[in-house]
Amino acid sequence: MPASLRAKREYLKRLVAGKNSWSDLQLTAAERALGFLGWHERGYLPHCDFPGLVQFVTFRLADSMPASRQGEWEHLLAIEDVREKRTKLEDYLDRGIGECWLRDHRVARIAEEALRFFHNERYELLAWCVMPNHVHVLVHVWEMPLWKMVRSWKQFIQTEVRPVLAERRPPARLDDNTPTRRARRPALQSFWQREYWDTFMRNEEQEKTAISYIENNPVKAKLCRAAVEWKFSSARFRDEYRRLVLSGVKAANLKEK
Image 1 (spheres, rainbow, N blue to C red):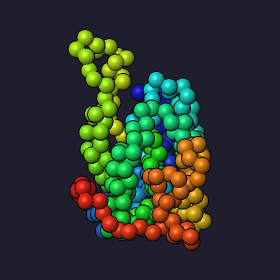
Image 2 (cartoon, rainbow, N blue to C red):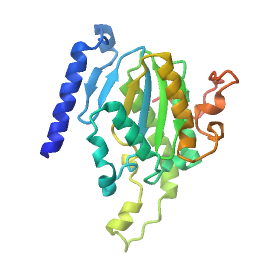
Image 3 (cartoon, rainbow, N blue to C red):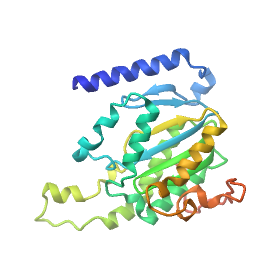
Image 4 (tube, one colour):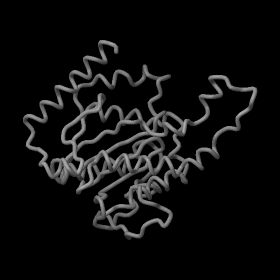
């Protein structure tokens, strides 16, 4: 392991250990039994996993920050301030790098339906937006740990979109197995990047700011002129008082994961 990466991971471990020692957020035995992990890390990013929090979550496609363009984004990972790092990385995602499979309306619809399926059963959705190469969610965590929630969304979406992605793959030729040709074929087994970003909201003002950011992300990325024009976000479900109004009707084709 390179010395620089080892130093970053040591810093991350110290950061998480410090949060576990002085944070007001502490898990009970019952909450641990449900699978909550509290402050933790998996080698790359700090995560906060407690019941009752409102969490701003972002997860992205595997090729949205490709190794071939590492020079463009590697320096962003060196930013120590977690919030600044997240902001810079999300700005990079808005450039629309990679295959952007979520730009396909069939794929985006599956992703949105997956998020909505257990709304008001396992968690409360407060806002969401399916972007071309990443997904934003503001969610009120109940008794399902955040890591399980994100894993469930990812697994379901990845499974359901396989037919669409397979349909879009360029036809293989027996005489063409070059690295360039192989690179054009979407690797279905690595649809999502393993990690996700989460930031818990400390007050109602932060929640409002997060909702505005999420729903206006397509406008910021110049994908539409107004938030309500984007077909796969919570913006189009707001009433005149900015309340989120969902019918609660589930998509018939969704199955529990």
